[in-house]
Length: 272
Image 1 (tube, rainbow, N blue to C red):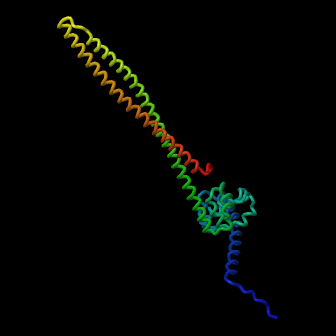
Image 2: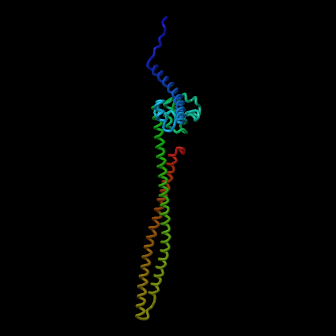
Image 3: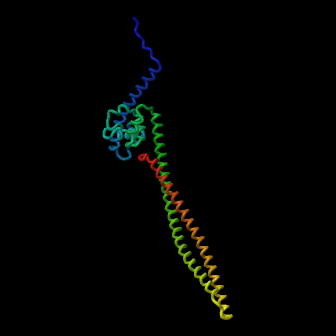
């Protein structure tokens, strides 16, 4: 009776390679943490200035490699909160390369980031891309937040300036109204004096000359008063228009400020 021969195809071989590779990576992480602990201990024991020489001559590590090991020990060691909520056994599912890549994510965000993105199922290249995208999104959010804050600040500044301008214009309107009232009173008085001068009956030539002089003076005063009233009315109308324009600009600035505040809320991840 002939023995059965198992036929192996390329897919089977590929799958086995990835399984073995993952097992090696997982074992490497535990070993890297233990090496990192001992490197930290060695650095404390060595005299100042001997660290780099010792690494090169005694353990053949570059300072960058040693720093990576020490960071892994510090971040994922038993004394720290692990990536998966303090469960050391969960580290067995995390390859060394991915654990090292995840150091780029702040510790307080790492657990949520890993769980949300199923890091254990990603390739190193996919994880690197995901971290880059996260950093880019955070940078974009920070820029949007800064822009919203700047827009809000500018809108508030413009609004305050236009409100101040409106207040000045409104005070000017009040002052012009008072001046106009006095000018109109002066015009009425001049007109009354002119009317009284015309009604007087001259007794002789001197009286006639005096009356004519009074009429001329009264007429000039009336014209001057009327001209001043017209100028004041025009100035008042201009001041009222300036106040109206300033109030409208202030209203627009407040609307821009409100829009900036909404943009700020959207740019703030917590608010969103």
